[in-house]
Length: 431
Ligand code: S3P
Image 1: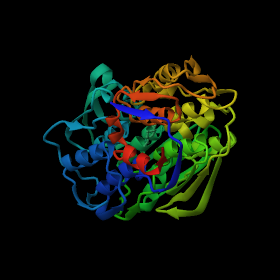
Image 2: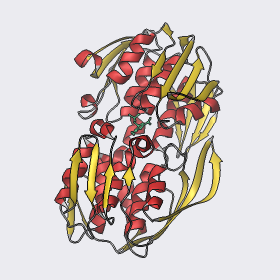
Image 3: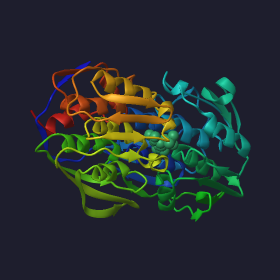
Image 4: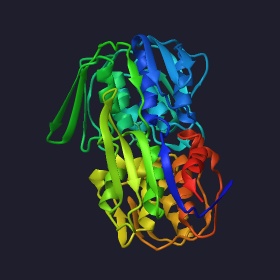
């Protein structure tokens, strides 16, 4: 439990922890590569630790060197684990590793924590079965625990209707050990870190815009070659501070080395559309990904905005904190086409609606989003996080703008993506 009070403003300079999606992938790809890889500025959080311990249980040797990892790759030849693998709270670990395990000719079982055991897995299990993996699990394989006996796969063409990066990545990881070609087409381009990083590990892939959307294709039995990956700062973690700077009068922040990949940075662009002052300085490239220093300055009350379905994938994880910003903007904002929010670490549509209402906002719940009529000031309330890190951080932002004392029922869940969130917050807060 944590109690928060209204802050005056935020000020200063900060490098938030590294990107979670990239840190997961860096461990997985370097484990599957041949040779010794070096991962710089790796995110050390509960989710990424889950990936690391699953890889270790599959026989991969990893040495920690401060904030970096040295990974001794096994070239797609892992060992049968002696116990159940546990992805804990991490959907990315579970879904990407199901793709990896499908390539391995041994028995393995994967489980997760209570939240992950309620999340759908058929989205990867079904196409992996089509590729030839033998997968069994609860509810026909839609829920963890799931057991896999893999090997002898063949490539498939898959239409990734939900534009899920986890599904795309899982199938590409399996496709690297499948006969023939594996193709994934998605209506909206989802985060493309897998494509970029596979190229950095020497894999050849074809990416093209096609009539149905975006195509990525690779040929099977390509080897990954060890390399060095530098992980940039996580835009999803940065979003909470960007929101605070845009909401608290007199704020000024410089957030260093933030990933601004166009499949990830729409929250920053949305805030600009609402009238916030957000600019990218020193735009550069780091391990094949665009990064910039983000300057954010308070620029008055923001205006309502709409998020359309095709915009959702590029700000999906930022929607809870965007909802908080919308609740304080002038006019009525709307998000649609975000039904995927219901199957994240919690039902994030329900969590956002309930908590915003408890803090005096006018919100309507939609099956696939929400409609929010902005108020001048939120009132303090009791926030229920549902053990979801992004709900805890988004509503900490809300609490810091509200009158009175806001209670966050379980703030420790931030360790999933940002263990030092409250310490960093303290560092930039002016009370
Ligand atoms: C992720 C993809 C997204 C995102 C999640 C991380 C990834 O999920 O919400 O936090 O690293 O590939 P979906 O693939 O289910 O959209």
